[in-house]
Image (cartoon, rainbow, N blue to C red; front, top):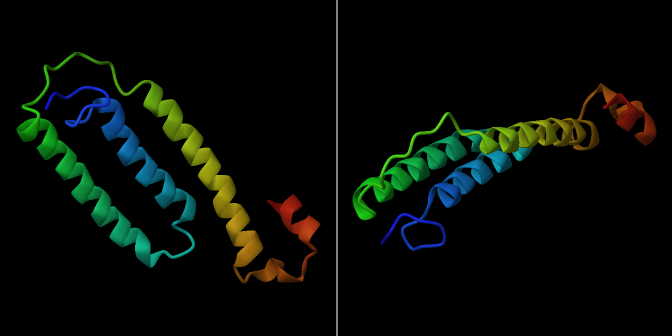
Length: 112
């Protein structure tokens, strides 16, 4: 199978998307159950190695093209990180037991 977009062999876009979606779920909701973060890290590592294996052995390693970095994916990662900061702070304020429990709902969200 060729290593190209929408093929059985996968592509750079699809492989990066899989890894970044896993990262996004991990950083957005890792605060809910911190024990699962270790398991998720292990699973992400296994997935990354499987993608590397598929790219080098199953699809016979595509021709390397020069690149200055991951360009557009950096912007996607920044958005995921900012969104996860908001989600994590809302989860802490809305669901976890803290000293903010005595405050009204509006004051809690103004605090965030």
